[in-house]
Image 1 (tube, helix red, strand yellow):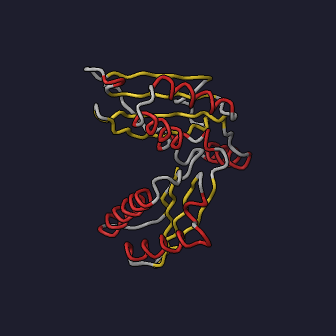
Image 2 (cartoon, rainbow, N blue to C red; image 1 turned 90 degrees about the vertical axis):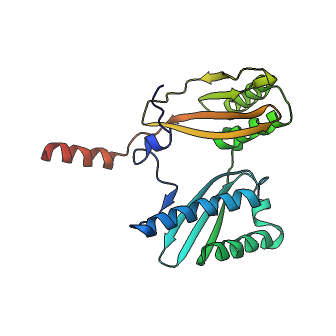
Length: 224
């Protein structure tokens, strides 16, 4: 078995930041971590058709700020803001703290890896051929400006007796390059034959370090 490293975790503090930002120690850390899982699970369950790609959580002493990145902000906000008010109240009851909810729109959902994975999983549940769904998603992402796309599906594809894995890629996807702006998404399709997993990598170019970061690293090197 090969060693698998999560593409986002691999690039933390190099070109990416954490999706959850707070500090705690001991049992408080455990409680807050489980609370974060509950918040994300609750939002996804309440708004399954909102096209939510990412949920960021920040904490103050008695306040929780939740930022929802969605392709359909109208569903999250609701008519005259009713949906987001109800969500804020439900999260306050769940956490026992004051909750601020912010909504950010994803302008290019066709190049968002998580949304692509969920879209393909939805098509598989509707019994659309996996090869067709993968090919269409890759073409759409490349048309919208992605430099590379890689899609993997695994499971009992097409109802076959034995599970297998199929891959499709277009362009270049450098998974081992730290400065590569690589977006990753994962979803599962619950079909009559069992669960089919979908993984998507989208390469959007390189993020080069700023001159200030290079100067700081050079100062550390010289001092050593």
